[in-house]
Length: 411
Image (cartoon, rainbow, N blue to C red; front, side, top):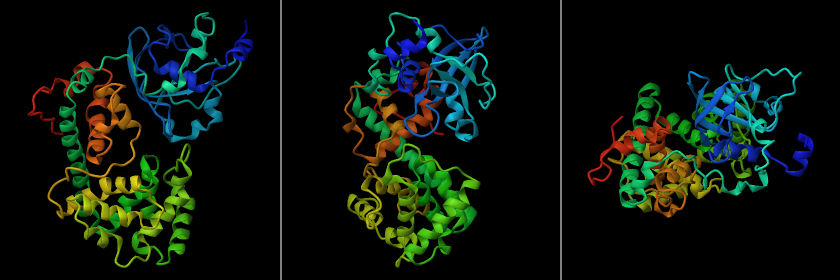
């Protein structure tokens, strides 16, 4: 049966190829590059459900010497999709170490634009002729969270039996994460000597989410807070002009897979509503809120949501990532609050929670408190990124986790 007929009878999509790469039970065991080098997948990487390469922080061993390479992996059906999707000119794809496709390139094709030393792996070469394989049997709705890589997770064995211990760990890590943010802000205050501009830049970065935090920071530099027109409409026009004409020269906007409510136009309108012509200023109104109690936190979120352009979850994210660290840095509050309103969960939070508690856990354990969500992000940064997939050597697991006097390493 030739490839065209096979594909007509059993259609395969890019999502199928992503599942094949991610799931060790589906992925062929004896992989090779199109050049014939053996490839051992130590870790397929974290499945990225946002903009950018499909998998991040993958770990591969290549060739007879088992040379270890670490980086991102991009999945396509055809090798030519790399160019068709514009990746060759996109700096977000410079760290791709493997381009994994279903089809091989035609013999007479000339491929360029891949990062240096990027491996080419064609999964279809290993599976198309196997009579026991059918893409119809892959449950695409189960990925990426219902199926995790087969690497043992010793942290799950500990925390799934002791959720109270996990909550204590998350609280401590969440507090530490906000203290680190406050420490960075103190350095910004010393460098710029401009409290209002620092707050403006941090808030704009939070409006951009992870994908567009850097472009929004650059926007704040190019159009400082004190240069915003007093009229909200004029402020929107000025911000839009700088975002479209100047920012792309230094930082790329990323709006693929972004909901309309999070569009650049709406985020700029939200920035203008917060910072143009306000009397008293946004910072003054937030200073009046007691952030150590829930009522004061709600009042701060209400200030952010007053225009109707920000939802409660995005306001909570700004409260947690900007307003509370800002107050800590200035000494207006003495410590990180025990509880904060929850922001939206993201891919990092969900994946770390699945590693710590298993796929059948109840997200209510952490999803109602912004401090615990921050703790999951910090655990991912401190431990999962450095130890995963060698989880047995993870310092989190080696700590005295059975003790109620749990103490994390200090960075």
